[in-house]
Length: 388
Image (cartoon, rainbow, N blue to C red; front, side):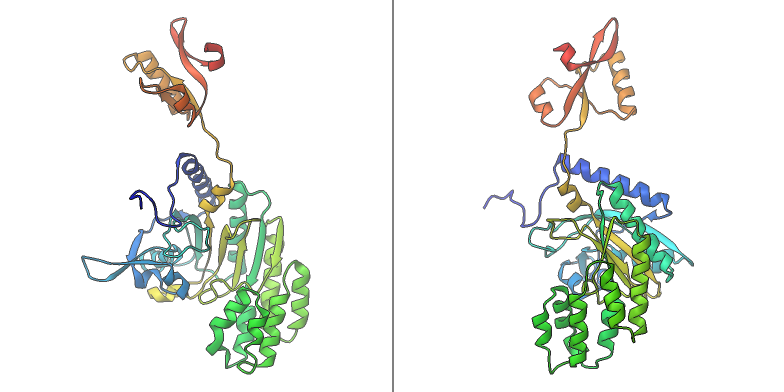
């Protein structure tokens, strides 16, 4: 085996993709900063018990672990930034009232989210702490939709759910805790047959209600159908009304509803949402409300947030060679240096040609439409078609 081969689901980010991801990152952070979200940069590595606090077992399985030679304790490479942001809010900033935080950076997964997924996703996101009001849910969801619009997704299809629907059904049957993992798997995979196998283990009414949740999804008519079916269950009707209101004000071009989407069920406590793109295995945005995670850090704080998978989005976009200006390599000419510096300060890419550079190799990376030429005693820009 060649020593320079990379592990499975790990790949270099090459110049064109790197430029695009950086552009998406900047645009995202500009937008969320304008909405009052402050950027934080948590470390890539932490003690494992901190990285997995308040989350489900799947995150622990995705976390690379190593022994810290300084302390002898178990360290983890972050597979998700949300627990880190919650730690910063609860244990370091320790503010009263609302705290709005944003982030962008790489994660590392011991296991890919799906067979084609990178194990080193590049993500961005926000977390809002300190509010249980539905307006905070709306602020975060609508900001996520705006962010996707800003970075180039024109038609956003938002899928909404709420953990209270499944949680209310399960709470009425004392036997469900024994089978919760199997139930959640059946719900997330819409596996009716697997649910029916639980007959005799959990009540027939529980199975009937869960099957109704599995089969009732889609547009707003699904909400009407579930609202009627669960007419005697106030917690479920309240959740349905909440997601109906959020859908109306989200700003998304399309909205669907699916209460069988139980991703993050073990730690999410309210509304859940995601955005998928046709022909992609993975959602490009996931989020929800998680009001209990801060307790693991000694301070209970209601919270809602989302993560956007920038590398997934970048892989869908066309990467073009950037426009650049070609300049001669006469480093001793003060006039040329001044002109090059001025162009670069104005935001242009100026490539100074070295003796080993060839036009062919430079044009693999850049569109060299213009070059600096010396005419009439000054350095000036000319289209290369005029000079060749």
